[in-house]
Length: 272
Length: 180
Image 1 (cartoon, rainbow over the protein chains, first blue to last red):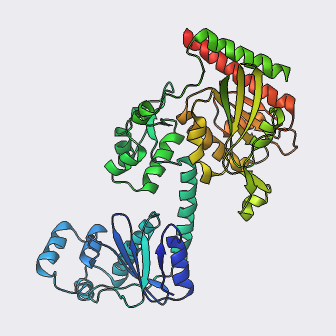
Image 2: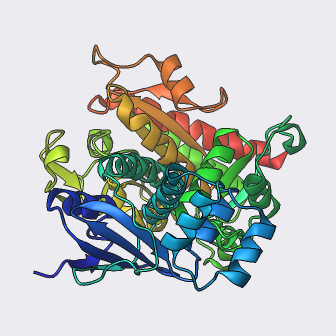
Image 3: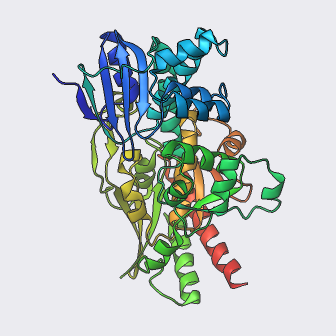
C-alpha cells in the first residue's frame, strides 16, 4: 500500500521510524502549508534533504556554514555553477580548502536541520516515492535515523507541553501589570524582542507569529518563555471581546440589587 | 425567575462532578461517557464529555446553577461557551496528582482570559495521605498570596459549601472594591 497521508494522523517521527525499520529507499515528499520538503533515504538511512526554493547546493551549504566567504561563494556561482557538487567537492579538497570530512559533516548538518524543521510541521500531506532519487549532481550522505527519531520524540513532547501551556494561538498577549516587571532589564534574544514589539491585546499570537515569520513551535516557545518570566499574560483578543455579545452576569444592573443577590446566595449556601 | 451561574473547572479527574453532586439539589445532569483511552481509563471509568450541571434554589426568585466543564483538552471548545456570564469560577486540582498541576495552571489562565471574574482554587482530596501540602501547591501552581487556594474534599458537603462561600465572599469583595 502506498505510503501517503496527512501529518495530523502520522507524525514525521513515526514516518522516520517506519523508514528506518523497513530499510526503505526513496524520497519522502512532505507538502506543508507554505513549503514542500523532499528527504531522500537509501536503505533506511538519510541521504539528502531539500526544501523547495532553498539552495541546497554544496556551495550554498558551505557558505551558510561560513566555510566559504561571500567572495568565494560568489565566484563559484559565477564560474562553476554548472559543475556538479561532487566535482566541486573534489576541487575544494584538492585545493586544500576543506577536507572530505568537513564537507560531509556540513552536508549532514544541513540535511539534519531540514529534517528537524519538519518536526515542527503539524499540517500537510506526505507521500513516499520509491522511484525518486536525489539529483545526480548532489552529494549524498549516509546517516542513521535513530538520533533524529529520538530528537523528534523529544521535540514532540515539548510540542505537546507547549500546546498544553498555550492551547490557542488565537488569544492575544498583554504586558503583565506586575510592579517591577521592566523589559529593559531583561536579556531577550532578537526573536524575543521582535515578538515583544508586537505584543498588544489587539494582535493574536498567530498574527505575531506571521509578522515575525515564526512557526507554531517557535512562537509557542518564545511566548512560553515570556510567560514563565512573568513579563506577559495571555488575554482575550480585544476586538473579539468588544464584539462579543454582552452576556449578563447578573440579572439586574443595579449594584445594590447585585450585592443583595450575592448575600442571598451566601445565606442559602450557609443553610445547606 | 432569576438565574446566576458558577463554573467548576479543572483537569481530568480532579473531582468536578463529585463537587457539584455534593451540593446540588437535583441529580447532577451529567453527560458522562465510558472512557475510550486506556491511559485515562486507569483513572476512572467514565468522564464528563460535554458538561454537567447542578442546581441550588436560593428562593422563589433566584436559582444558582453550577456548571462542570469537561476535563479533557479535546473538549475545550466548550470552555468559552460555559464561561460566558459566570459570576465566578472554581478551579479544582487533585492534590494527589502533581502531574496535573501544570494543566490546572493552564486551565486557570485560559478561564481567566475568557472572563476576568473572581475565582478560587480548590485543592481536592486533601484527606488522602499522598495529598500535597497546600503551601507547596500554591508554589507549584504559581498562585499569588491574594488568590484563595482552599483545602477541599469534593465528596464532603461541608467542604464544598466552604469553597462556594469563599468564592461568593470574593465576588462580594470585588464588587465593593469596584465601587471605591
